[in-house]
Length: 301
Image (tube, rainbow, N blue to C red; front, top):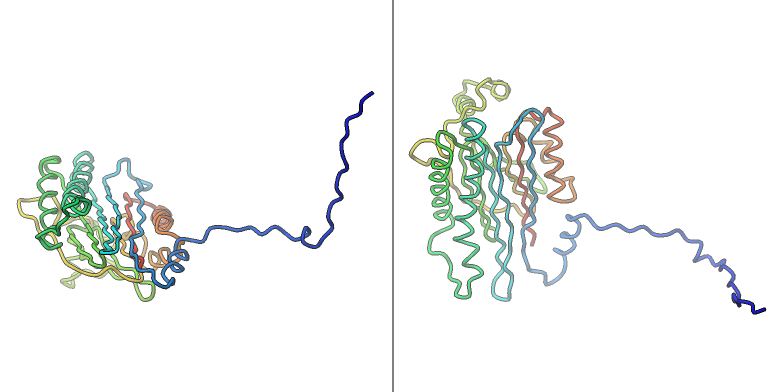
């Protein structure tokens, strides 16, 4: 009878090396990765990191917020141009018209800015635009105003849009969505001014901040996209915070989560996307009475 040779089983090693515990590794958070990249000698490539989040909230049946978030970069031996377009619109004028107004606004502005800035970048006969970034933004807002009036008669929306080219920042603003700068060190700062009735009464000294927060007409606006014949947007130039973040949000966030908590969540979160999700959670934990939209962008050198 033939036997199957099974060989000799080696004895288990009793060395100290085999008795060591396994080392568990995990990816570095986004913030630590880019801090390490930024310290490498000769690293000059800049880019934009952005996150966004949109939520219905706890008490609304439809979502009248809309957002647009686009980051890009062109890096070569001759140029290094981070490009970003970040937009939030909050609809008004009834359920259907509010939704139509906000989504029409972000699509119209996004389409215009891409046509003016992104498409030429990838053209082989690329030439810089003749207009200034501010003029391009003014034209984009006008196109969006016309589009909203056509798509949602009687409706309208807030608008807070940011165009980033390199370290340059251009903001267009109407209504009570907001843009903030959140520095790595220092206090959060609002870049925009609300175009609301209660804010105007505050500025005139007729309401305190506490009274404005609970005023029954706190959502009444005197400027909005798609309303009236004239476009009265605040358009201004600034610089991207560096180090720090640009935050754009609807009143569903800032109306229910205070500035200090917003800053703490952003600075303690390991990534822009996670920070946006945590901001949404904070607004919902506060009751979530409104739709919530958030865009967060950071320039990394």
